[in-house]
Image (cartoon, rainbow, N blue to C red):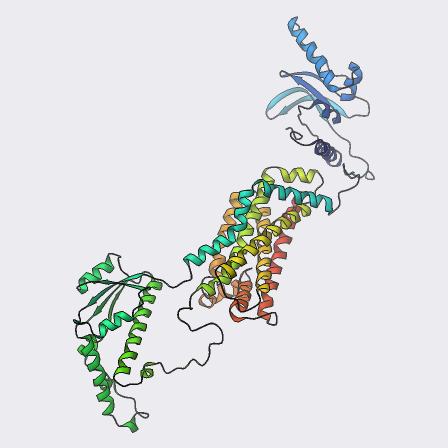
Amino acid sequence: MQPTVGVDPLLRVTIWKHLEELCIRDGLTVILTTHYIEEARAAETIGLMRNGQLLVQANPEVLLVQHNLSTLEQVFLKLAVKQDDEKKSGIELSALPPPPPPSSELVYYKSAEINNNFIPNTAIVNCKPPPPSEPYLHPIMGKRPAFFDFFRFYALLTKNCISLRRSILVTVFYCFLPALQFSLFMFCSGKSPSHIPVAVVNDEDPANMTGRFLDFMDPVAIVQVNTSTVEEATEVVMKGKAWAAMHLYGNFTSALDERRQKVNKEIKSVHIITLPLFPIPNQLILAEDDVVKASNIHLYLDMTNPVLGAFVISNVFLSFYKLMKEYLGKIGYNPNVLSAPMTIAEVVYGTMDLNAMTMTEFITPGLIILIAFFSTAAVAGLALILEQKDGLMKRSLVAGVQPLESLLAHVFTQTMVLIFQQVLLFLTIFFVFGVNSRGPLLIIFIICFLQGIAGTMYGLFISSLFPDEVSAAIVTMGSFLPTLMISGIMWPIKSISIYLHYISLFLPQTLAMHSIRSVLSRGWGLEKTEVWLGFWSSGAWATIYLLLAAFLFSRYL
């Protein structure tokens, strides 16, 4: 191998010192190759090879004295000229044994087999371990490497910043990625469905109450596709061109009015005094089956998408509710008799405005947490793995860098990028899309920032655990979906199994998400324990991942 190729002179000296330290401390034998002849003077024994032939093998100082020259390059040129002269004269270079080494050196010569190739007369240098009182001196500072040095840390931080600057387009995209992801969510998710095709068969001619009913249907939510027969309407649904078919009978108006009159008549025939004591028999309050059937709205649903199916049903119900209120008002009845026997005195949190009731506010806290955690986890893990694959990690460690310094340098670099990410994300959420927060934005920002730090630590932990980017990416992406499902981000946590419910409480995102949701939708502050749990959970997981990463990094020592 050629360990000093392509490095600066200071690092070359450091590498040689490190190899000497391995030889002295561990009693190892180190064999290396180099095309830079002068640096070979640091070796105990050198062999000069040209055109596949070993010209000489000896201690470098002995060679200089023997040939009365000042540099090894001059020795090599002299031997190369001699080799050419002997080839021209037809005499091979004599394979004389090398001159004896100084008496203080423990060098012996024997045949060796390296990489299954037989090499005769190879020098094997065995270094005698020093007495215990002789410490290993750091090649640059003249003392053992400090556990943490600010100047080394600053150099690593500068290196990471230069790496980000060299790939400026990737860095800019990475900074804007959380804001772009949230924007995509706002454009595609969390809102009520619209433009749902529904096949309509209206047999009433002229359309009386059926026409009013269809007018009450929300034209943005429901697109009415007029058909002539029930068979044609259901055929449209079966072909996937509509999500429901709706049939209104030709005598819908008269049947509905007859149904009301019959119910009125039957109720009046019952003594008032008996109403609280005895329930009204079903046969008294129900009209005949044909009248009920003709006054009903008949739906043929495609429930392969439950969300759209439920949305169609709710729109039909609300439209019919509006129709009946108008109808009862025209005939002199109080429209409020249609209301359920329930009064919502006050909405403590949230709203009852149907136009404002979307999933956006529910999903937003979990989405912020998810983006903050996994966007930093993926990049932090990948950066460290690529640094190891390029050999920068080992070169830094040889130069005296401590694993903790390298780890913290990556943490600080990702933290600087994270701050910029979070600012752009919050501007997008609260100013571009106008998401309303009933509590302090600073609390939400700090919890999200801690989640980003925890994600960075998670990425460093994964990169310390796996040697290649493929394995790290598989583990990182493999943990994404379980987190999304179990943490209650997309669906209420109360709907999952009780065992998974308790497991989810120990995930990094669950408590932090509930804290942000409480601040965002309820307006809670630091006086609530539930809000503090988000801080504690995020900080605890960041610390755990950092300690695990530092422990795994200790193998580089």
